[in-house]
Amino acid sequence: MAQHAHTLVAPSLLSADFGALNQAVDLVNVSQADWFHLDVMDGRFVPNISFGFPIIKAIQARATKPLDVHLMIEHPELYLRAFKEAGANVLTVHLEACTHVHRTLSAIRDLDMKAGLAFNPHSSLDVLQDLAPILDLVLIMSVNPGFGGQRFIPATYRRIERARRLLHQNGGEDVLIEVDGGVSVSNAAELKKAGAQVLVAGSSVFGASDPYEAIKDLHQA
Ligand code: DX5
Ligand code: ZN
Image 1 (cartoon, helix red, strand yellow):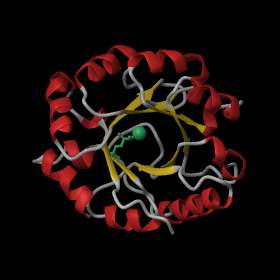
Image 2 (cartoon, protein in one colour; image 1 turned 45 degrees about the vertical axis):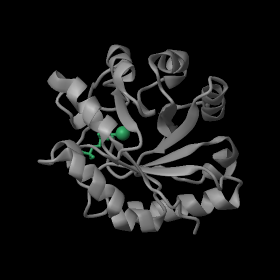
Image 3 (cartoon, helix red, strand yellow; image 1 turned 90 degrees about the vertical axis):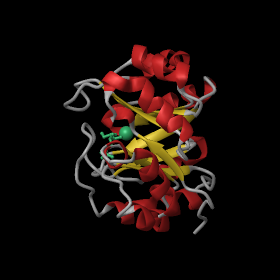
Image 4 (cartoon, rainbow, N blue to C red; image 1 turned 30 degrees about the vertical axis):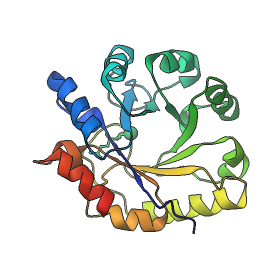
């Protein structure tokens, strides 16, 4: 199993203090984190509303690391250029929210962003057989999307292994596997072993007494 030597860590700002957003961005900037993970929710695809373009632009103006934007919205295809203009480097859409997923992923790449596809915990990974060659990232949800601070679903380990296998068999050797939801220092090592290459962590970072150390611990796990 090809495992990247260096696992990426992407703190989710959803769990940060939005009244002190600049400090949260600065903290991620100086930490060992690799990306910013930004969760966009529309109150329709998921039962929660988070933030949109003005917040992403404010983060982008201060961030010194790539923005990994996770869209939990219906009809993401309508807003691809707007997310590019707001500063997204990686743009991930949900399989369950896309009728023309191949077209949407291709359009993301045409805009010079990395194309990501997210899978809810119930969604079959079989489409990877067809989509592997046009993907840059696969996001395996390890909770039901919509909220930070939820409990990790253990079936995720097997799903990551299966995603890795399907990608390898279908021309997606270089596609990164990201895991999102309930990730902490207690499951990070096992997730890496299963094949996760990007760890998203919200509450285990920003809920920690020392977020800077929590990021370091995820790297070292
Ligand atoms: C959930 C979001 C996650 C969330 C993770 O729908 O996609 O990125 O911020 O939060 P934790 O790490 O607290 O589960
Ligand atoms: Zn997310």
